Amino acid sequence: VFAGLDGKPLVSIVSAGLSKFGKNEGLYARELFAEAVKEAFDHCPRLEPKRDIKAMFVGHMGEAYEHQGHTGAATADWAGLLNIPATRTEAACASSGAALRSGVYAVLSGLADIVLVGGVEKMTHRTTAEVTEYLAMASDYPFEQWNGITFPGLYALMATVHMHQYGTTEAQMSQVAVKNHYHGTLNPKAHIQKEITLEKALTSRIVATPLKLYDCSLITDGASCLVLTKPELANRFTDQPVHIIGSGQASDTIGLYERQSLTSLQAAKIAAKTAYDMAQVTPDAIDVAEVHDCFTIAEIIAYEDLGFCQAGKGGTLAENGTTRLSGRLPVNTSGGLKAKGHPVGATGTAQAYEMYLQLTGQADKRQVKNAKTGLTHNVGGSGATATVHIYRSNQQ
Amino acid sequence: MSETPFTIEQFYKFIAQGKLMAGKCQKCGKIHLPPRTLCDKCYSQEFTWTEIQGKGKLLTYSIIHIAPQQFQDLAPYAVGIIQLENGLKLPGMITTLAPGQLHIGMPLTIDFGTCNTTQTWPQWPRYCFKPSKPT
Image (cartoon, rainbow over all chains, first blue to last red; front, side):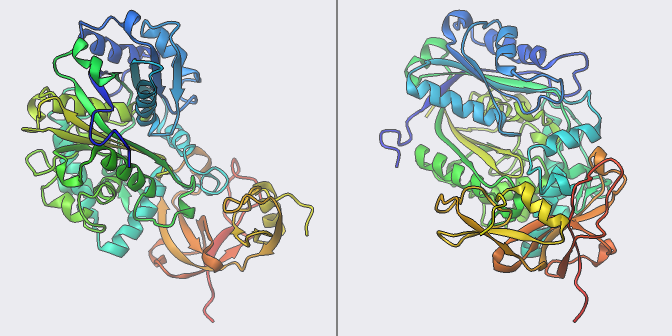
């Protein structure tokens, strides 16, 4: 399908950075981004950023939070990279998944052989009602927003059908939250590093039936970035690159109501197929994954869309331990959007950051043993954008 | 033939008149609800208006408890996706019903007159869905 690519590295990650996720009071988005960039540059002493980095793509969803658009230029300047081509990518909560994909385009095209990709969002200074309104901007305006359908509301509409059609339960959804909060305790950069009980999740207050507070990801401030290069240049910068071997992106109707299916995200399935085909791997080859758990039902649907289980079996996978750190296929070892947090524009490359740590053996207490192949799945809106990337460690 | 544009704004002007109208492509016959200015199937720009029966069944629903600022006076309120004739679908609020009575597959009818609204937003022509009267 992809002549000449068949499982060979497309690009290589030679360094990565992540700000602390949480309430970062008094910091602007560009300052948070600088924190992530500092880690990535310090971690890669052979990189001379001003000399080497030729272009930059930064995911950022909303101007409303800080009354600030034009984030590409602003973050490039604050990253000490003034004058390089710097472009903001926007695809709602998949904004930095799209930045990563844009970086892959740039490197593979040959126009820029070393690229910084990342994302940022500053959200916690706004009220919950304001954030609810801003996030809803990623959904259809004249039909969904006009009818008061919130973001949790859209995923609730999917959850209602998933429960009806497959018998998925509220307890299975809550198990996703319990798992991801446990993983969050192992990640010192996670927004919330506290375990929760199944009962606490099940009895938390209702947001949009059947989704409760602990089915929802967090409103978080954070930034993330990666340094990408051509595979043949990677060893110039590090002895331990991580290779991206598959990259898929797809779109779907902006309105959930127009979709063929309410229990599956077609864009995610298409993006996954593209990435698997490019990487020449099947779902059973994946050792570790970060999936877009903006709501617990979204992680269950992700298992199915990515082929980790059959359609309708995601709830079972969530409760049988398979996707816990100790299981066969650990998912969201970072704590996911649920516990690490979901600064929307930063999420896609934050998932890739976790994969970089896992596949270079730097994930510390949450390290997945012998992890060789990883996957990230980043969704925008209610599924109108999805990106899927597949990674391979340098040791084979 | 109609001189009115096949836009979302025009769709809501019809809603204000109590009509649920879709655009029908003159070239390939695809019915667009909401109407489109360019047929996504055959790229034609020639359409006629066709009225859609406002009866359908509930595909899915949720009760929204945490609402955006503009809708907070209404919360909690029910929303859903309704399947109309020809496989057409619309999202909307569902009114005059106790939340526990909602179920997938229940028959609903569109309503133009007495939809819930708030002082602040929205003030545009509205439609909503109500349970169909038993026949």
